[in-house]
Amino acid sequence: MSPIVTGEAVVLELRPASFAARALGLLLDMALSIVLLVVILMGLSAAGGDLDEAALRALMIASVVFCLVVVPVAIETLSRGLSLGKLAAGLRVVREDGGAIRFRHALIRGLTGFLEIYVTFGGLAIAVALFNERSRRLGDLMAGTYAIRSRVPVERPAPVFVPPRLQAWGAAADIGRIPDAAARRASQFMRQAGRMAPLSRAGLAESIATELAAHVAPPPPPGTSPDDYLAAVVAERRSRELARLGKARRRSAETGERLHRLPFST
Image 1 (cartoon, rainbow, N blue to C red):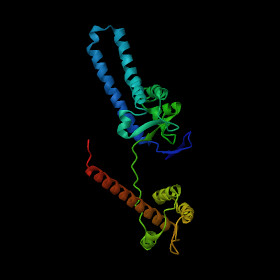
Image 2 (cartoon, helix red, strand yellow):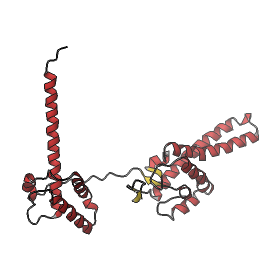
Image 3 (cartoon, rainbow, N blue to C red):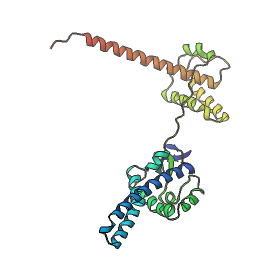
Image 4 (tube, rainbow, N blue to C red):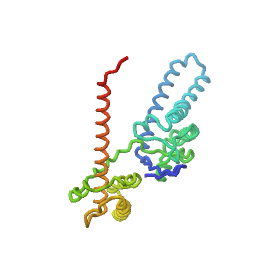
């Protein structure tokens, strides 16, 4: 992951694209550009009898620039970093600060890409991409951009349940005074606990459990671990919130039915 701190002090976790994914997207984009160029050149060849040699040569050069530079730059600008090849490979080009690219970024990438991809047959792009951690080619280094994975598998959080030995305590505990901020920290910890280092997990669990203990009564049974305590509090609080919302919805539906049955005169 690539941590980025925005101007609002928000940390973004972006996953840079691998070299293989970038190569796949680039090959697809190259194939589409070359196919478009071949179609245009075939059309020029069919109409070549009506043009002199100088005009035909100028149109061929313009076609090459149009297909290999103008079209990629326009697509990346309008789509904010996408192209057909990147879309198929699940990639997107972004700025170094994680924001969407603009015309100048796409233009620098397009002009440099013509040199490092087509003129050198991709050798310069490969050589540069292999020696930096984000697989950035020369155009990315000059434009201040890099490619990220736009399709990342969603990690489903593990379900949180009240441990069996704490079910009786959780059902009778007073947890209504827990501040929302503390409850969010506890819930976030339970979602991320499985990915944390054991030492960090133990320390953070102890800290959050101590914070919640000031708002929960009575205290849990002796010998309860911080992890079990947090799981019990989070799961019980969630169950009570769901029950409260269910009652509110049923009450609202019943009120609506009674109002619907009332006779109204016009």
